[in-house]
Length: 189
Length: 234
Image 1: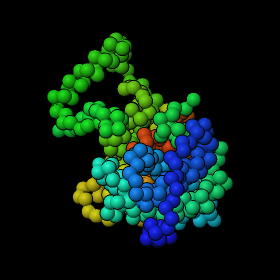
Image 2: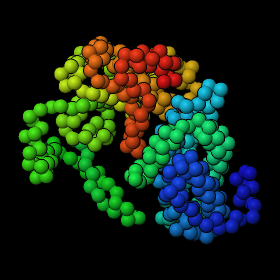
Image 3: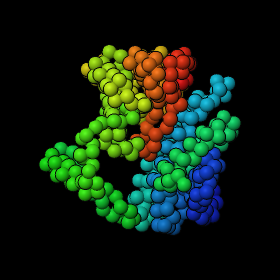
């Protein structure tokens, strides 16, 4: 859907907040990452909502900004400096993983640029107490990130997660679990 | 002049560091404070430390100021023998590195040599940049060769930073191979000395070390590592 179409379409309903992942899920690292993707889709719904919502909602903007600032950034590290290098070591040549990982890494770099643009819009919206949809370029910035993220998640869920389930060993998953937890300030129990 | 941080509250109430100037005099004051704290907790600490140096580990790491060897593995002074250079290389013609390795293996009789690289290494990035940087280009030539030998593999990684990280890993593997085939290490194994060589990579973004599964503990394993695939496929 084009940005103009989205804006013309019926306004989306309030999507609610972004759910927290249960900490116990950290023991199942691939399930945890899958759940993170679900939370990213929730973020996309919020971005799509805020792109057209005419009312100013400071708490939703601040919560989404925090999610982008902390959770999204952590997730990129989870993948770029953990899951992807592990997959590069574990996958067979027939898996042909490199092109997909290469594209996803390029996506991550673009995500960060688009996320920065959204954070700038959020900062301005909070400062002026104005809905992001009313700011020049606001709706466009939010929808661009949402669209980019959704495409990225679809590729990860369709290709990367099934390969990870097939190729990672029990030891890999234990080590991954330890690092996912440590990255979030949870020491091994 | 360097920078120091002090805590303050962010608009959302989260403690957030601010940057202030640190003078050279501050460093001496900090040193006195550090020594006093150590002595207060353990009055014998420095006397014990000065009596002998018996570390079990040799750390071959990068000079990057954000990778403080002792701190990232939570070891006290005296517990880790450290050699650092740009891009954690183990060159067989470098008198500095060879002296450290020989002393560590033959005199200190360390049990483990750890080659630890880090993601986002500036040395690796410079080697891949295709630009001239001066003297450092000579030092980084082995990394450039490593990349060029497997350019077909590395160039499939479209994102430059991800490519740099893949070469960082491959560089660790290459240095583990270099250490494991070094005559000082080979002779130690012939003597029956217990000695393992490990390849790790650290992330500045999360403070965590990843084991690259390149550990070798004898000549047979070293040979197997040397003949195992290319640098990119450790």
